[in-house]
Image (cartoon, rainbow, N blue to C red; front, side):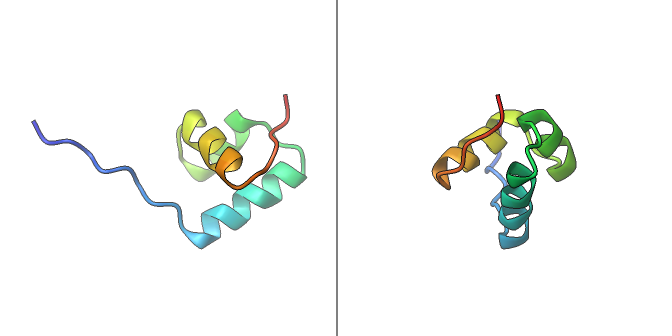
Length: 54
């Protein structure tokens, strides 16, 4: 069975993530907009030092 490589985050996606967090969107809303999994969004936000809305 072939294992899938995680999709890399582009600079544009990182900027959108930052902008949406600043506008107080939740992780689920951001994930839907970026077509990513919620866990992936949370992981990237934490890696970038950003806090998500509770």
